[in-house]
Image (tube, rainbow, N blue to C red; front, side, top):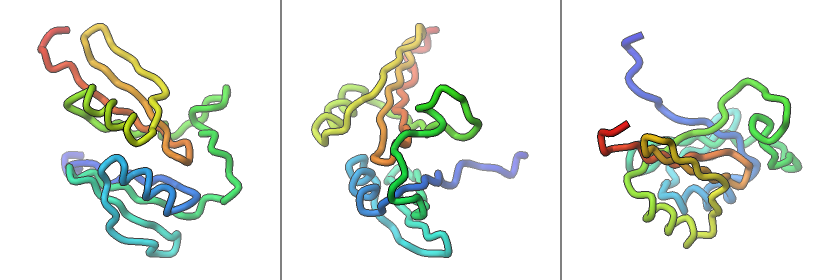
Length: 136
């Protein structure tokens, strides 16, 4: 469908708005509004235009194990979001300075690099640095 122009937002179910908000503020997201609506939902926006909706109805005693990533049985569903970056070292330094550990790093033969973190609810976030050298 050519009418689709971009992803509008990513929805993440979280246990606690304050904990999620604090974490995502460390990544540069800004709080917009919430909780609102029947679910309820809160919205954060990154200056680059990425919008995250926190769905605030996760059980407070829910495990932080990610059912899509942390169990041997592979369930269908969205496994992570990927945020494209321009500078690996700068992002790694920032994550270290705010005590967010990198859980995995992968470098492809063409030079493309991606590394992963987890938010407090176990949601996976990829930082993706594409190969810009033009070589494969």
